[in-house]
Structure formats: structure tokens, C-alpha cells
Length: 304
Ligand code: G1P
Image (cartoon, rainbow, N blue to C red; front, side, top):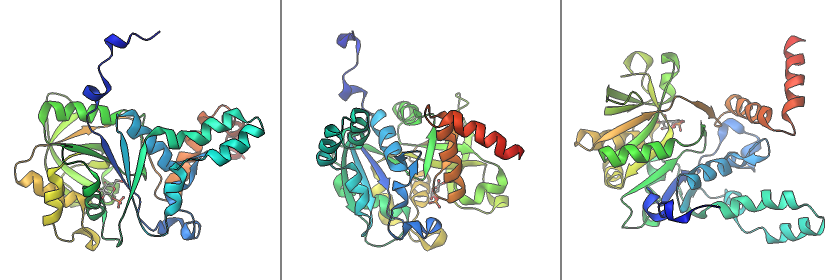
């Protein structure tokens, strides 16, 4: 039995209450599927990517998930809605295991959606969540649903770094320089902890020879609410969009402390079919039902 007295209260342990998940994009790289199906609902084995991200946010202590969607993507909110009709049907058929699977998204975390009417960039999308975040919330998380950061747990480490250094904390991956121009890139110096770097600048999608390092933003942010003020002051940047990176860079230039936690584990990019295929295969190989068969087939397929 658990000893309740030795556990910190959930409130004290909660580093942030809200987690913002920008999911308003058109998903052009997944056309024609994304004509009708939001890319965030594409399954990784049997679970939509956005449910994996919601589970990560809940595990890190978030109470509410603020999903930023665009008109026509109502299926995302529907995935997190009450599913008692379907559950009744499954109950009648004696499918207990499936009931638990179906219920999970609804029970994980409270979900609210906010609408981004125009595709003006990631910075603009995060700004759309402002009114849904309580005035007393000093910091909030942002999780990009294209990025799976594995194993989960990096948000907890980021929260510890914020406790220690204040300000905002982001997650970084060390990527090969030839791939760096797909990312927001950090200019860093070391701290006493090899996995924590102080950030002195940040630039969105630099050319490889202009990138200040090979540390790339990996889709997890723990942002001080002063970011909203910075988001109001930036102008369109890379790709003509309002970039979250530029708001972070503006805060840094004004002395706001920013650190990164360098994640040394795995990562999947669900934002394009190639990365999605890898993620699907990786998760399926670990699945007790599908893994053994897939492994044998893959081995034969690769030798064939
Ligand atoms: C976004 C961010 C970028 C970050 C990347 C991580 O870019 O703008 O800073 O490194 O996500 O996946 P996008 O992939 O939307 O072009």
C-alpha cells in the first residue's frame, strides 16, 4: 500500500498547470490524408500521436491541455471528448480492454481548445492560448505534437532547471549540422551540469554554416508568462511567420534567463511521412501483440 504521508502534495509537485499543444497546421506533408483527417490523429500503432503527447503532459503534472486548432479540425477535440455511447456498446460486447483504451484520452487530462483563425506561425499559435491560461500561472509548457521525445520525463527535468535558474527552459537535441536548418538553434555556454546549457541567443532555421551550435529546439518548452509580452512585440521572421524562437530570442536579449536541457534519448518527428513511418515501426516493434511478427517480417524483408 502507498504511504500517502511521504508523498508531496500534487499541488506542491506541480511545476505548471497548463500545457499548450499547437495543432492548427494544414498537415500538407500528409496530403491527401489530411484533406479530412488531422495529422495529429494519425495513429502510432493504435494511438493518435496527440494522445501520446497529452499523456506526457499529464505525467509531468499538467492539469489542462490547451489545444490550438484551426477551423475544420474538430475531430481533435472529439477524440478527447466523453465516449460513453461507444463504451456502452463495447460493454455489451464484453470488450473490457477496449473500454480502457477508449476512455484513456478523456480521463488523462482536461482538454480545452482555442482557435487560431489564420496560419501566422508557431509564435502566433502560442499567443492564442494566452486568455486560457490563468493570471496566476507564472509558467506554462508547450509541447509540439510533431515531436515525440523519448523516454518521457524531460519536462520534469526542465521544471527542476527552472526552479534552480528561473526564467524559461527549453529542450535541446544535438543534431548533425547538415540537418540544423530545419530547427530553432541555440547559442549556448556550459553549466556545471553537462546536460544543462545557458542560452545566449536563438535563431530559427539558420543555414548550416551560420548556425551558432548544433543544439536544436526539440518541441518541448517551459515558458515564463513574459513570453506573451515578447510575442506581442515580434515581427514576422523565418518563412514570413511569427516565430516562437524570435520571442525567446527577444527575451534573452533583455536579460531573461533561458536554459536548455539537452535530451540524450530518442526522438521521433511525426511531422512528415518518413519520420512517422519510423515512429510507427519503433512503437510496433515494442508492442507485445504486433512486435514479434513485425520483427521477423522486417528481418526477412531486409534480407530479401
Ligand atoms: C518548429 C520550431 C523550431 C523547432 C521545431 C522542432 O519548427 O519553429 O524552432 O526546432 O519545431 O520540431 P517546425 O518543425 O514547425 O518547422
